[in-house]
Structure formats: C-alpha cells, structure tokens
Image (cartoon, rainbow, N blue to C red; front, side, top):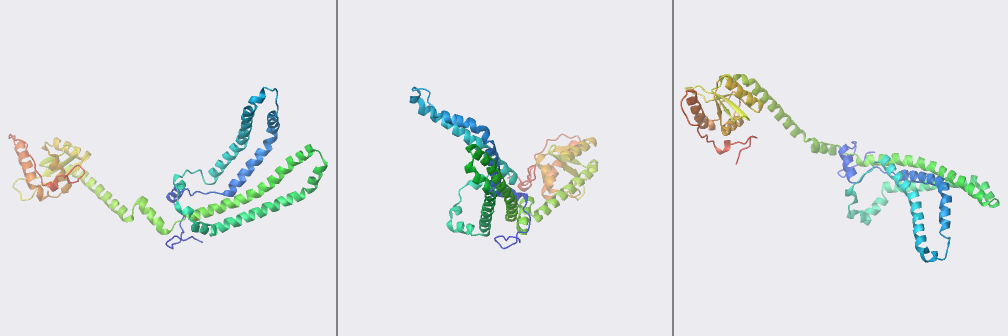
Length: 382
C-alpha cells in the first residue's frame, strides 16, 4: 500500500537520485540493527577462538604483576605495576576493539554506505518533544520494532534452552572430571552454542535487512507532484524549455540567414564595422526614395568574412562601433534601417561617398539616440 504525503497524495513514484542524495545529507540512510548484531557477535566468536593463542602469554604477564624480586622494588612497585596493568588492559582493548570497529564500518558500508551528515548531527528541538516521542514509540514502525525484538528474544532463548538440554548429560559429567576436562568441554560447547545462535541471528539479520530496505524506499517514495516539481527545479519548467528551444531555433535560422547573405556583400555601398566583432553591409542608391537596406550582417567569424569580401570588391569599410552595434541589434537582413538611424547613417554615407570620390574629408562624429547605444551583448548602455 502506497504511503500518503502531508497533502494527501499517494507516494507511488520511485525516489529520484536527487531525493536519495538529499536524504543522505539529512542522515537518512539504510541501516539494519540486526545486521550489526550478527556481524559483531560473529567477530566476537572469531576473537574468542583466538583467545587460547594469547591466553598463556597473557596469564604469564598477569602473574608477573604479583612477583616481587627484591625489597628495593617496593618503592617503585605501585608505579611500575600500574604501567604494566595499563599495557595489558590496552592490549586487550585493542585486540577486541579494533576488529569490532572494523567489522562495524564494513557492515554499514555493505548495508547503506558510510555517510557523513553534519546536518543530521545538529540540534533539533522536536527530538526532545515528549509527545512526538510517544507518537514514535506507538507508531506502526515502533510496534514492528517491538514485535521483532520480542520474537528475536523468544527464538534465541528457545534455541539456547534446546542446546543446553541436549548437552545436559555432558554438562552433568563436568563435576566428575578434572578442571582441564571442564575447560576443554567449555571450549567446544561455547562456540557450538554461539554458532547455533549466530545462524539464527543471520536469518533474522537477512529478514531485517530486506524489511529495512523496503521501509527506507517507501519513506523516500515521491508523489507525482513532487516528481514534476523536481523536474522543474532541475531542468526548468516545460514553458521555459520551450521558450529556450524557440530562441535557439531563431538564433540558428538567423545565423544561417547571415551566412547565406554573404554573397550579397558585393552589392553593398559600404560596410559599417565595430571594427571586427560586428559588420553591417548597407546598400543605398542616391536619388532613390527608399532608405538604406541591410544586405548582410553578422558578428564574429561572419563579420570577418563580410569585411574580407568587402575588401575584395573594393567596398569602403567604415569603422564606427556605436553605429555598427545599433544597426546590428535594430535591423534585419533585407529590411530597411530604423528611421531613428537615418541621420547617423546619412552622415556616414556622405563621408564614404566623398572618400570614394577621392575628395578629402574628415571622419565625422556619429551621434545616436540614447536608446540605440548598445554594448556588445545587445544591452542598452546607461
């Protein structure tokens, strides 16, 4: 049965990678307590099997603590023995602690991965709320955990009782044997008991792992609306993406049109440049009523090609960055220039005409309306 979100929608969708990553940041990763119990006891059993290898040297070292070789040792004995006791305790702690710590890390790595989440370690007031605490205890998850614990205890106690009952004759014979016989029997009986319980714990751990995995995935499931909202956040809304695609298509068509218009540069009267980033080829026939027409224009590589073709056909190239940008951002190929640029273009063409006729002329200052002064990105400069 699908879980419901706070707004009543069913969580029917699989969690996205972004949802999983966010859950990890919050410290919400897959964990299995029973798997930790199983691996820890298994490692404890392995450590127990190696105890005979170090028991004799350890007992010898422990016995030396109570040996006094001379009276002079009585003054320094407390400090010396204290240091030796510390060494023995440290060795025992490392002998048992390091393997248990390593197996715990490997268990979490195999179950849900090792995750460092500072956000999860931060203080949250709702964690000490007694009402919410009671709700967690008596929730379905809390009751399931309680039921698992009760069943686990019943199963393990039943198995232990059965094994002890089966081994009861041998245990009763211990009182008639020597201490070595008793220790030898315990050495074999104890691992058998723990091994049997360990097998049961392995079965419990496997069930718990799959159950916790199921619960973890159910908690991370998403509603259809959450999936849509996430797609909007990552990829943008469909409207925005459609607008971007339209702009890209328009840009592509414009670039294609600019490349096709290169063949018209030979018909141009003049080329206005920026000097290299923008180039606009104008055609104007004196005496005609029509305003100058844009026969070709472009920026970057296309601008460079327009200038090169203009030079090949001995067409005057006039450098005026402001006018070139204004023509580029307000005009289209094949159309007349904007009426707001008539005066500026007329001044430029008059200068170019005199230059083409071989007459001396000073380069004019081109003035433009404030709303037609653009930067190289097409933004109006303030």
